[in-house]
Amino acid sequence: MIRLQAEPFDPGALLTAFCEGRTQTGAVVSFSGLARGEAGAVTDLELEAYPGFTEAEIGRIAAAAQARFGLDDLMVVHRIGRIAPGETIVFVATASAHRRAAFEAADHLMDYLKSRAPFWKKEHGPDGARWIEPTEQDQADAARWD
Amino acid sequence: MIRLQAEPFDPGALLTAFCEGRTQTGAVVSFSGLARGEAGAVTDLELEAYPGFTEAEIGRIAAAAQARFGLDDLMVVHRIGRIAPGETIVFVATASAHRRAAFEAADHLMDYLKSRAPFWKKEHGPDGARWIEPTEQDQADAARWD
Amino acid sequence: MVRVLLFGRLADVAGWRERTVDPAPATLSALQRLIGADDPQLAEALAGVGVRTAVDQVLSRGDVSLDAVKEVAFMPPMSGG
Amino acid sequence: MVRVLLFGRLADVAGWRERTVDPAPATLSALQRLIGADDPQLAEALAGVGVRTAVDQVLSRGDVSLDAVKEVAFMPPMSGG
Image (cartoon, rainbow over all chains, first blue to last red; front, side):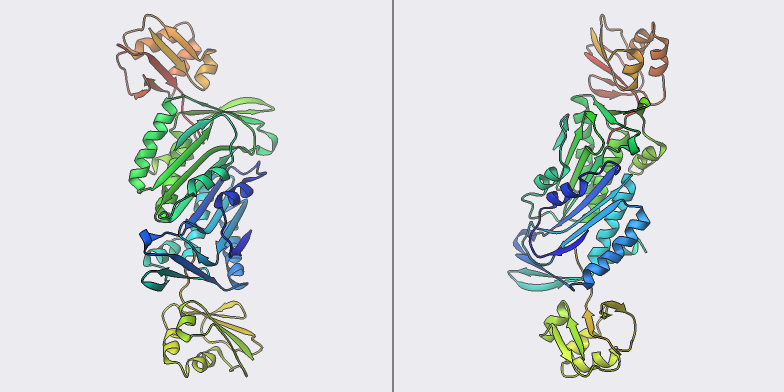
């Protein structure tokens, strides 16, 4: 399941749903990316997507990851719009028979979402707003899987 | 928090509690290990611990992981006793400012729990029961962190 | 006629996010020149490192024909998660 | 007096999980010989690869004195998760 949504969500509720009824899956890894307040320097985040294209692009990387890591299933839920500190920006879950594949696939999906998925992120704070671009570390992280 | 418990638990409810109120944590990784039915070959698992010693040993590795990976927090909940297919055997969550540390710490804790924590695991099936010992892969996984 | 979309800081620089260009120029490069013609800051931003284009929601590399194309998006470096 | 605990397949092999040995032998190795004396299968299992011991809930390596020790555990290879 791949979903963009403007409303806040609880990563635990998504994990509950994702684990339910699995009797042949051995390992479920989840990643929850939370908006950091940076001790007051960030009042909120603004996430922009390209509706339709963003879901399709994530769908392509998800299908490739499912095949590459032999996943049973995966889930990606990503917030768009205004996000307050402490709220979840992104939730990724992966399910596989064994743990290594589930860890690697979640790690891989997050590296992709950080620097290659069609999202644009703006930080708002008391000193104004700035667009966040992927860091060199983000680029290097994503390149590990090329 | 480190806890052994005989009662089934919902990994999602633990993740909800673990994420709550975090405004300075950027990344939460969770691992849920589910009992596999192996297409009917396993009817249930039996997990034995050494009460007191097991929690203390996990506490030692958890404290070391918290320092090594610079974690904000971590949680380990492990079932003991009889476990049916689809039920969660173990839940690990790690919280840190950035995602790499949270992923590595969860991966590390699971490698440790699989082959070095004081648990003994028996599979019950239609053909009888057998004790599960760590595989060579499990040993190699744990040795990555030595 | 082609719909042009700007995302992220490109939209902030331009002061618009969506615009219709009619008639559509023959190529992507011609469209880029056209929308930057009266806005040097946007022209510079569009030529910036890491700006990518999607033509009818397919990532494009280099110049392409806009024949029968409905939508072109200009996208600055991406960052989600 | 020392309490002896067996875990996992060691308990299955022995047919017991907990036992009191009184008086306590002087050393861990003497205790191991004593509990295996009338049970060759247990003696073999205790000598198996990967069997570890905890003395008063502290992992021990090699032989140690059991002076003032209350509890000794024999543990086969561990596997959780």
